[in-house]
Length: 238
Image 1 (tube, rainbow, N blue to C red):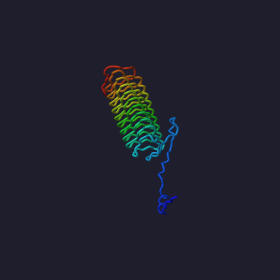
Image 2: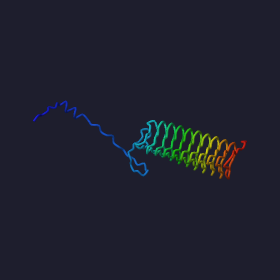
Image 3: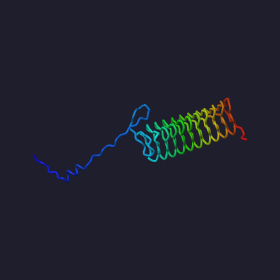
Image 4: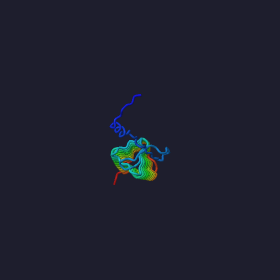
């Protein structure tokens, strides 16, 4: 039988050599029906993010906020309060999602846009520029809200509708189809702008007014009730 001589130095080296230890996996329950999943607390803010997400170190996720699914949060975006970003949603640049707001599905909130309150942005919609989605507003489908536009109250923007410029939509207003609300137009109360209709200038759709079809509202035209579905409807501004 042959023995191999091992020096004291070799024994010391072997004893001091440590094998790599795998990082401990942490889990968190995002309360979406899946139970606890691998996740970690984001280095900038301490909010929980699922390991399947992509969250930049420059982005802020506050302690009460969560990011999960396959969501992306990058740039200097801020997610805080009790906000949720999930699904395939993306929040980027200097956008902010806060309060109890949520951004889900394949929605994209970017530039300096804000989503706050109980607002929800979903589908394949986009919120950009300095737009604000507030209170209980709901943006869905392939809708777009951008520039300085604001949607609040319980208003809904859906389909391929667009709200742009300095337009405001609030109350229980509905913007849908391929409608466009722009300029300094306002749609509120139970006003509807649907189909291919457009509301621009300083026009107002309020009460139970309904602009649909290919109607174009301009100037300071006010639609309080009834429906218009074709032609240009304009009124001079005082």
